[in-house]
Length: 215
Image (tube, rainbow, N blue to C red; front, side):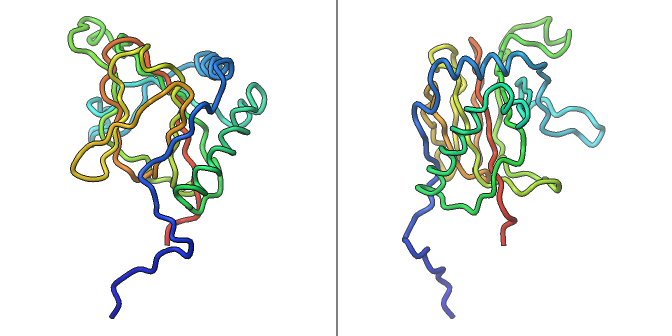
């Protein structure tokens, strides 16, 4: 019996991650930030305990969402450019069977000085904003599975301290270099995290691209 899987016809090797620089101009990035900051933010929730309490040791960040109607009305260039970038990166590095953006884009703010309740406001000692190890590919009965994740960094990394983006595909963690206007793409089942932001504010936009169910 042959236990080997045949390689794809073109010999393409799936990459762990890829990036696209200068995806947006400074003016376009500022438009994205203004649009994101104009909407109410809420605390990101990744899970609850059996008692129904928020799991607070995994994620500390603020989020809101930009759906297609909002983007078409106020910033259609976002959809146009991200569609092009997604197609180019996927065809060059991943070759996933994708069908499109099936979820609103997530505008994420990491602000270590923002507190969720009076208890946290009472102490600033060792407070930080982060998103611990997780994967993006989760249950979603109302949408196609997430296959490709993309992150658009909206600010220069020198505007905040910490906030590194790391992935784990083996024994060692790999820090992916962030840059203003850079789009980083990676398979949605990749284990990744944002390390604690200890000073300044980190802003990004997260995009998930879905496709037919895995077989």
